[in-house]
Image (cartoon, rainbow, N blue to C red):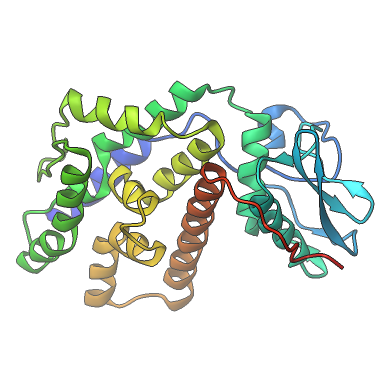
Length: 289
């Protein structure tokens, strides 16, 4: 019975948290004639068309160069990022591509494109509200009533994180076994929204991306405050899945791929948010020829 409830709950989460626009920005060296909606659909792979990747500093920030051509967004805007560290990270994504460019592995580039083009035309307040909305369906706030081993596992692993967040931000979050989830006080939403408002638009894009991956605002806060590592946050977000795998076994390629992909996306979003919210200058360009 409880497994049926979990399936219903997960289906409800997907409906409630359906994003207004997918963060799957396509990337390319030049203009894309497709509409905004189609331009941000996952692109197909293509043969690598450049030899060298470098970065230069322009008036608007740091730019990525593929040979002698400047990288552009899907909407044909100049690809410019606010920090040298982020530029090096993005350039590394491009430089690490082999004979074939696999756009779906380039999460930092995707997040930059989304920040530059803003295909869903959301402002800062809308980004904040989209992230805070996940409190209503936060993964670690939903609890099962049986079996006892899973109840204990959730309590031992999730309660310390919730307690940390409540103390860190002086708010009430709690948990619930109801399929409707816990009742989050208005003050909690206001406090966390105010905290998110301290980040700039670029960092918020990364934060919302991580929240969407983990289905958890609380775990994302732990990552932003460096209370949790990416590996810890991902495993906590998959606690129920890992419990089922331990009990019933797993399909090696399917479960392993899902885990590694979630780690990659979460790591990219976390790194992106940190690099966009910190002021840092890299003295030695790693990709300098």
